[in-house]
Length: 221
Image (cartoon, rainbow, N blue to C red; front, side):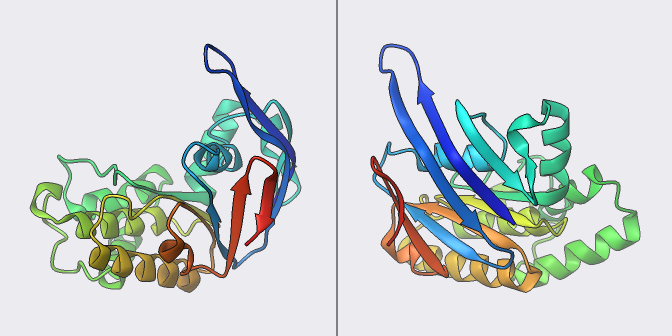
């Protein structure tokens, strides 16, 4: 489904450096993989390139054979809105919206009608064990619960690709285990492909395959 071909990325400025050099990677439909590596090695940069949030110096990111690097900003925004979901370390839920309203945002952006939207949100809240918190505001939830909201929101519009960047970095060990299991189960249940970026071997152990990102490139662990 997703193919990265000879991807390179450098940053200029006082601390200029090449982060990725001619990196290649394939992700098949239904796979859930982890990309590990030390801090600063370029894990988040690679995720941003695969999601079309940043552009490489050279190389291709192909989704079903279509090169994201050749698409315009508006096209990429629409593609992400329809086909990608994101889970970040910092949750990024909107504090003035209820849990249900946060989860429904991707559906509203994609023009889903009210009744199907309500049914989808209810099903997702059951899946992430937050069915009793639909009317709660984010400030009333724990960190683990907030990350479950983020997972439900990421999957609301049934994306084909789910990207998770250190999703348990702000959680205690018990909450982290619960969130990792939930993320994997939800990605698999929805038939999506997923990429988990992490420095944690425990987190990576929840995936189907693990890759290590080093200065020498990306290799199976």
